[in-house]
Image (tube, one colour):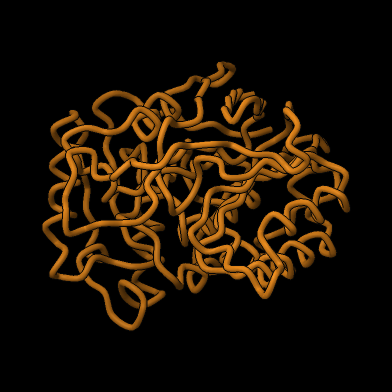
Length: 337
C-alpha cells in the first residue's frame, strides 16, 4: 500500500535545506518565495539551515538531519519543501528516523530527489518530484508549475491530470527577472524512441539520475523490497532527468540500474529535457534512448516536462501513472490508489 499525504488550504509549510542553503547574496529571493507562500494563505516555518551555505552544503550533516527530522515528525507541518537542490543530500540519508515520519508531502527536485526516492522506497509514503520553493516567488506561475497545489491536494482514491507545457525555458537568465520566474521561449515537444505514439502505465518512481543512481546497492535503493511490500509486484514506470551527465556517463548509470534489477517489471521510462546530455564523439543522446528501448523492449519517452529546464509536471513517487504521448504532446494521469 502507498500512503498519500494531502495538502489542505492554509496548511503549514516547513522550509529546510537538507542539501544546499541560500547564500546571503540571494536571501532576497528566498524572502520573496516565503512571502509568496504567505500571500496564498500558508503559514511558513523556516529552519536555520536555509540561510547558510558553506563547503557545498547548508550546514553539517547532523544539523541538516536534525532539522529535517523535526519537520518530518511535526504534526502541524503538511508540506516540507527545500529552497532548492544542491550536491550532498546523500550525507544525511542514514541520519533520518524513517519510523517516526508523519504522513506529509515532501516536494522538490534535483538533489532533493535522492531523499524523495529513498523515503518512498523505505516507508511507502508518496513523495512529490516537482518545483522548488525559490521557483514559486514570481507574480504568478505558469500553468504547468502551478499544478503542484492541485496535485498535492488530490484525495486518496482520486486522480489528477496534467498536460505537457506549451513552451519551456532553454537556459536560466537571472539578470532579467520575469513575472513567472521562468523565461519560457522554446516550443515543448515530447518525443519517443521509434517516433511512435506511446501509451504506458505503472507505478511512478524516479528523480535526478545524477544522484539517485547512488542509492543502488544501499538500504535506501531496494526496489525489489518496495515492489513486494508496497505495490504488490506491479510494474514500475520510471521518470528520470539528467543534470550534468554526458551521454556515456548516462549510459553507464542506466546499465548499472539494469544490472541491479531496477528495470525488472518496468513498463517504460520517461526522460526529462536536459541541457547536458553532452555527446561523446558521435554518441548522441538519441542513441542512448534507442539502445535502452531495444534492450529492455519497453517504450522510452524523452524531452518531457521534468528537471532543470522548467516548467515541471509534478510527479508523485508511488502513484499509479498513465502516460499518453501523441503528436509531440503528452498527458499524465496520476491515481492515488
